[in-house]
Image 1 (cartoon, one colour):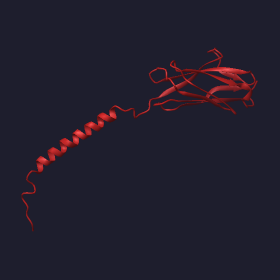
Image 2 (cartoon, helix red, strand yellow):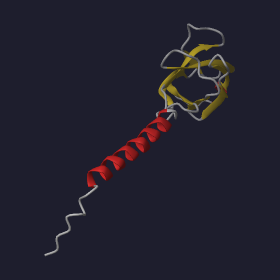
Image 3 (cartoon, rainbow, N blue to C red):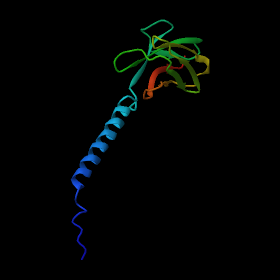
Image 4 (cartoon, rainbow, N blue to C red):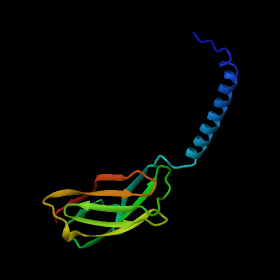
Length: 144
């Protein structure tokens, strides 16, 4: 059997050096990852008015073109700029992009809505660095 007693000489020092180099590399990777936005933030979109009225939340079919104001905010209540907002469903849709105040005004022609009785329009918002916000019951529609 071979005996090499010199193979273990210097082994503890090599382990210390490799540990220090490994920790320095790990520290650099953690610092790099910490500077990146890897986890998307949460945002919320709400219809805050129809034709400058904040009290109405029902839309009637065949009532002309209606102006729907939508606001998009993040979890801290700050406005989300440049978010794409879409209202869709019931064979109609409209879209817009939020401004610096996190708001957009969408024009929806109620004559294109196809519903018997009542139904709901969906609201979706998408923004860079944010999770998508969706509401399947954003706006109640009643046939007029």
